[in-house]
Image (tube, rainbow, N blue to C red; front, side, top):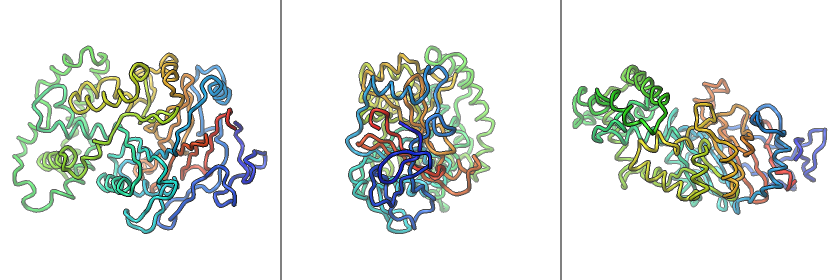
Length: 464
């Protein structure tokens, strides 16, 4: 595969930076057609180029890879030919409660046609009816509206789209924290509510604004001291937690968790007040959240019910963050279906085991030294199960999607920083962005982002 731009009619590359236009009479790359652009605020790329390999912001490799990225990809294709999904996969990740970013990304994917300014005013395109829409985790937190985004995802499902929802660390942290409220005191779980910290405040405030207005909104809520007792871990937690965690967490991780909770406890009520909340409102919001998300007749019960940890399509494994050797070993031994079964069981019945065990590394690893390791042995076990590329978000990028080579395994990093709060923090801009990564049955990957001037086209060497 070469790194040059692609000409419109032939698919060839040259030194004059020719590009493929979406509006060309021929569309050999099957580039998406953006339908309903006037109803979204996003500057989407209209021309394509080969995915730059070895270029800043677009690709990278870990330091112990003996060959360059392009050579390693060619070798990998010779040893393990990829199996491409039978239908297009449209991958969106790290939406962080930004519905406008999601709708713009859906238009960018070619999966929908926007027909008006309101959230429900869209319809599936022909390609959207064939495709799988994979939402790669972290729909919660940051804002501006968790509930609006979930309602929009539900609309997509109701219009007939095949939607898959993957677990993200923000989603799971919210669920564990709010589910733990009013459970019997247990050192394994009683700290989860305060453990959410400041990142939970926008969601609690949103629940209050939508459902807890009026003079009688808190009529059955106990006084502040009782709410504090119900929401906070018991006074003995700092002594009992290390004993419970011994053998599950390394001693350094236990010490770090104790330090982190002390910090969260010190700031929690101040964070509440900054958000215009207090302990009684927080407790009422937590109970309302449980009604909405955990009860089978709740409006958002479907969200966690549909959620899974991983999705395999052809040679591609879709997760939120990444893998380590222990998860690779589990997949090798029992398969992805078993991995998802373990996730469901642990999340519903064994919260502590999940959150501090190896499965949770799948939703939070950034392949740092403090994370559980992924070695070439784990990569080889994945390849024996037909997995030759990992697709994930979690690690936000400023210049669109990136290809990363880790221990010889191709990683598509797809968190392109679309939500407006991340973009403000990263000094990208005040408006939301848009991004989608498309896996085509023809054997190509297209990466579309408002922060890169071209659609990046990846076609493995064996197919180019």
